Image (cartoon, rainbow, N blue to C red; front, side):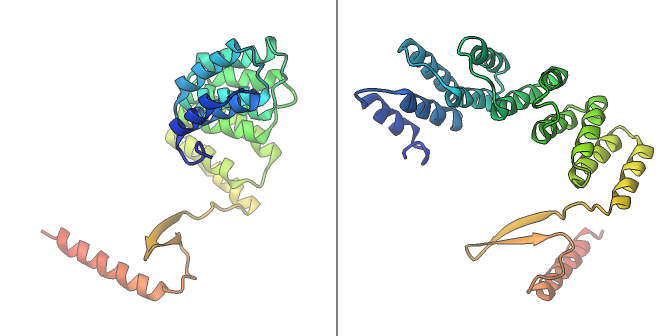
Length: 240
């Protein structure tokens, strides 16, 4: 309860007072540290758990891998991933691979992440993992690998417009305008459209969403008049 509310120190106080600490209590405390950005404390507590002869399970390792992934601790993440398999005989699940692919992707170790996917047929075509790596390719501007992964994603889910949009943006960032036109033409052919952008604004303690080109808002006329006034005022201020 304390950990869910962000009171990690209070949670640790309760943990220390436990007469017996089982796997669940150790894992819960490690998860609390990791989910609140206190990664080194999570790793230290994990080490103490092992010294206490408490054997970790797949949930414990998921907490450790997730913490390493969010903190960018590549070497630690790889070490514990291999430890999970080779020392404790735990077969990785999709969620473990997801943490590992995200970790390597953020670090720019894209080909290493892709090789892990290719070596494991059970996850090689998983849309979630491919999408994670595809986003990392965009972040690190690796267009060659990005195109290869995009082809796999389109083959798995040809109706997902986000793949086409990211691919088009990647091509545009490299000035490959013929390829941009090709991707947009394919989207038009399939009848795919970009999901409209959305903004949330707090008005009188209520969150109100606004969508791009949305003409259905019940205060549309008032909003347009206000925007027109602001635009006119800005133009007047910019005049020499």
